Amino acid sequence: MKNRKFTSKQTSFIDNYLTNGGNGVQAAKSAGYKGTNKTLSVVATENLAKPSIKELIDAELNKITQNLRATAEDKRRALWEIANEGMEDVTDKNGVTRMKNCRATIAAIAELNKMDGDYADKKQPEDRVVKLYFDADDEKLL
Image (tube, rainbow, N blue to C red; front, side):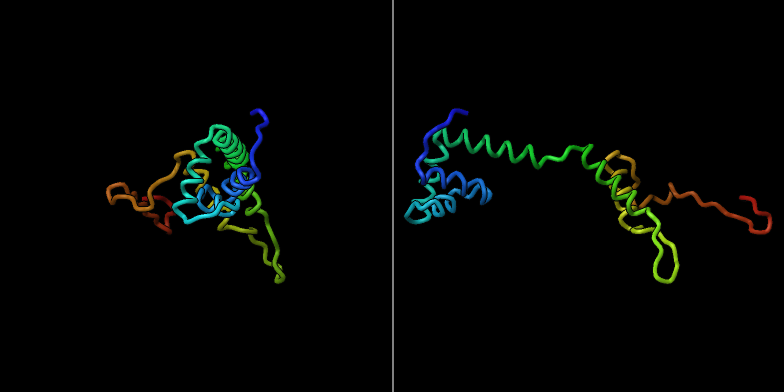
C-alpha cells in the first residue's frame, strides 16, 4: 500500500482499533475524539469507510491473521512433540520409573486421532460390543 498521510487522531484510531479487538467506539475515544458513544460510533463508521484507512486496517489484520494461523501440520507436529515428551521415562525420589506425563501423551494422541478421523465414540451400541471369554486353566480363548 502507498504511504498515505493520516492525521494523528486517525493514526491513533487505527492503532487502537487494531489493538482493542475492533471496537470502533473505544478506538475513537482512545484516539482523542470527543462526544457521546453515538457520536463516537459515527466517527468510527466514517473512519472505517475511508478507503485508505480501511485498506491499512485490512492489511494489518491480514498480517496478524497470517502470523497467528497454525496449519494442520503445525498442530500435528506440536501434538506429536507433546506425546513423545510425555512418554519419556522419569525416576522419582523413591526410585520408581514411570512415564513423564501419561495423561498429556494420551490426550495428544487422542487429538491426533480426531484430526485424522480415527476415533470411536465413547459409547458403543450393545450390538457392537464383542465379548471374549478366557479360560485361565486352558489358556485358550473360548
